Each structure stands twice: as structure tokens, then as C-alpha cells.
Image (tube, rainbow, N blue to C red):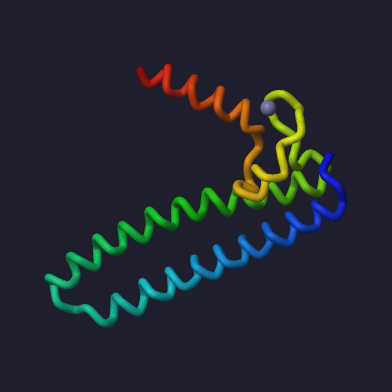
Length: 121
Ligand SMILES: [Zn+2]
């Protein structure tokens, strides 16, 4: 069972992470606008476009992480945080610290990964 003290710890941790991600996302958007004004040359434009694709890919990953963090915060509020989605067992604190947005205990995660590998073959 995740104690209230631990809940607070992970809540702070996740909120901080969320703030950082949202700040980064804002910076990315602002940076894209600035770069557009500074590189009128067509050659530079081409590299700017690939930079932009790169940035968008990063942002896609960030967006997914933001969603996961918000879900984790919801789970803290409704008391299901730190409980494995698959088997209902507690997820170890060590694992939560390494991957605070996880919804699976290490055993179920390993099982899932090996099943995914089997499907891939
Ligand atoms: Zn499990």
C-alpha cells in the first residue's frame, strides 16, 4: 500500500515533471517562431524543416508523457497509484521511483514485454 507520505512525494515529483515538460513545450513553440524569422535562405529553410520535424517528434513523445503523468496524478487522487493494473499487487517503490508513470509491476511488465516479442516474431 502506498502511504500518504509517499503519495505526496510522488505527487510533488510528478507535478514538477509536468511543469518542466509544459515549459519545454512552450519554449519549443516560441523557438520555432523565432527561427522562422531568422532563416529566410532556402537552404537554411530545408534544414529548418528537418529540425522542425525533429522537434515535432520530440513534442509527440512529450505529449504522450504529459498524458501519462496526468493519469498517474489521477491515480494518486483516486487511490489506485502504485497498484499493478494486471495483477493488483503493489508496485515496488524502487520501480515507481525509476518509472513514476508505470501502471505495471515488474513481473507483469516483463511478461508483457516477452509477449510483445513473441508477437513480433
Ligand atoms: Zn503485476
